[in-house]
Length: 141
Image (cartoon, rainbow, N blue to C red):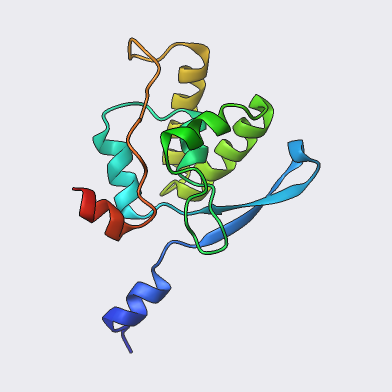
């Protein structure tokens, strides 16, 4: 028996994950799998996504709404210990990668960005507010 549209949307919706952050003494944070709208926003930016932005696009509340969706949120994330940001970003990367090969490629890109070996001339700055949902992204587009 196949799924109807409502069942597909329910079962195919991005999942929320509680991840343990060792660098926070084992405390847990909630992250959201990216949906197509978020992935498209990242891909269409034409910029490499750094660890701060990866965390920004993933940390969410119990409803799945992004915790730091605006420029001010990104500034707050940048005040966290780099060790914390790096650990959360790498776990988010694994959650959002389509497969192991993509995860390895994305992780290599993050390493290059952090080491300054990025092909871009400057650090990326996604200044536009991030959508909390596909509907918000559609309204902006």
